[in-house]
Image (cartoon, rainbow, N blue to C red; front, side, top):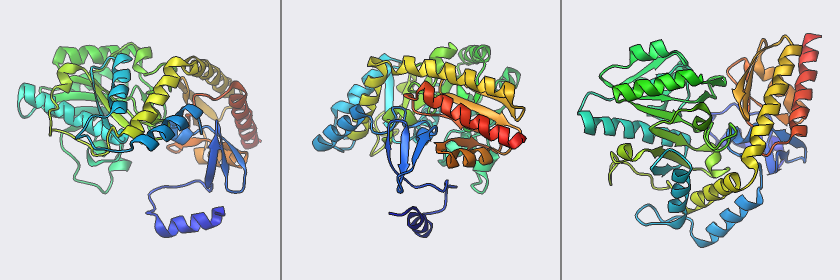
Length: 398
């Protein structure tokens, strides 16, 4: 279908909830995608940190095809092997003891919020239900998760919001300590704020947050929807930051493109969920879990994590060098293959310029560019992006 015809049909039939780029993607392979006219684009968006193995990875395709031919869905009234096996892999390679599966990052965070409140209610009774989150955070688009999100722009028009949430500045321990009271059930934060502008949590800050939670018997919840599954060079970002949470949420890269989310917890907390207390019809379906298993095997048994770590270091150095040469770059932030640069110009201009040059990138806010390519990205491809950014910034300075 021609791109213009597809855009017209989209305007006619779809609710207009997205600001889309003027591009219709027909297929993908590896780190590249192609439009309906056959033009090639190097993908530094990766489905917004989802396509961690790139496009068309043979192991992922085979796992999906094999499972689709065998069993797609049964509901959670019955046991299925892919769900139990995926839960086992996640538990064996994390701090957690139990897993709840759902379909997205928002649903995973919704489950975490409910689990924290249920745990606190069971242990302390009514009234100890408040959750402290961070300003400029992002946790999803359900009513609970937009309330948890510390950005007014995603909450506007949906008032009244869910009560019991308080927001403090990221990386500010003093504000956090003042916000924690005898009504606080949990603290929820992202190890790296992705949508909020690629801000990395300070290691010492996280250690102090962990100590505060332990002292006050408040649950520490990490939203690793974007940072999990190898994005930062280890399977989970908390491994590099030296702090273990009580609850962690995953999605995005977990299915390599298939919709799946997960809420992981230590056993003493997970026990707050009992039959009937939470559920998801599609959550943990065999097809999504088979995809998740394939992703985990590639990450854990191959060299992808090591490769991603090396490429992240190369990328960060390249962006830092870019900052030294171009005054338009205010700051470089990130970890592994979640990198961002803050600019003295509108980010959408650079996004459009890159698109015209055959490279897909993404902006968060008005002045920050975020790069979340597949973990299989190569040094040559990173250098191509860096060269392209150099050309764009030099043009702007001229």
